[in-house]
Image (cartoon, rainbow, N blue to C red; front, side, top):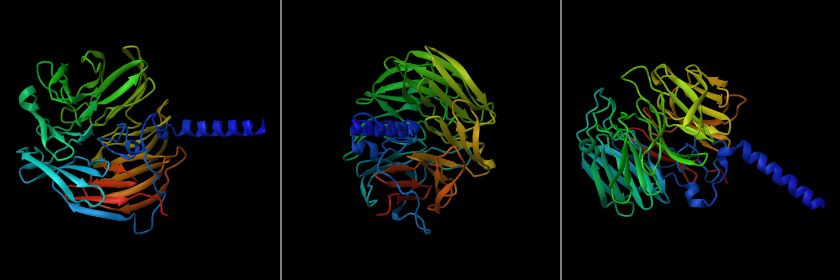
Length: 425
């Protein structure tokens, strides 16, 4: 009887730990490789959370071990990893190039290129913005001018391709095409921003055939997510003008919520976050953050503020009732903050920290700043606490890194680097 009581107490303790660190719960049926892969934008579950092998809580004064470095071309497209294969999407000369690398050595296994004449209106980087997606042995890529390709992961052979700008007639955005493909249940979803009711598009992931189109919403720089709210499966898009929830089967619009920046020359860039029946949205340019509760096909506002967490371009991360993210415009020196999700209360703020991207692994935030500094920050509601930091790249770093099998893969516009985040033996 005593043994049963002790076992019960242990199980309760474990359940409490998992409840608090809800983002670390291993999804049912997930294999070790699935947990360690980083096959798409924002990771395996498109929420910035790494569930794989445990990482170090600090590193030596000289920084984490550099495994390899590689010179690369232009782009803000993040790397993705499946098994021992890393996919890099960049621009060299007048070619958008997809390269498959050995993730352990950086050696090129194969490459595929096509012509690109994309010109940035503001003189910024002219490489691809969208992060590739790997699903069921295929790679899906969307170039800066809207060239959509599906390639074979094994050898890079082209399976199908579509010029989405020609097909759907969208106008060139201020900063090019940036939506990262979402692949779910045999469908590929994109915020295209096309004319004639083709703002949102679903394709067959196998053939590229258009399955449905919906709305006249212009494209933003945000990427869609798949979500189950209650018993309802849906694809959530944050377009230029606001949130749209759609039925993945037929494109039926389930709900809309206006949420956009006040300036035409601005961006909706951060990806929506969901937990239970709650949806969190954030944008900069006098827009701010909002927490919505889904009730059937209607949305109820829980709180809204421009003083809490205005994400300029980087998506926040959520663990249970805590939000961690960047507040404020990139050019003004954003703050890094911890927010109580249910109330919008600011628990701590590291002002003028600077912009970047952030991911979550267990109790640690992995923060990569635009200036190339890598930080381990304690994911605590108590205070801002840096466990380790190191300069791993030169500025400017805006692409999201990939975290896979205990390694971090990060890039600027000239170099891709692999560093070890593994615990010291």
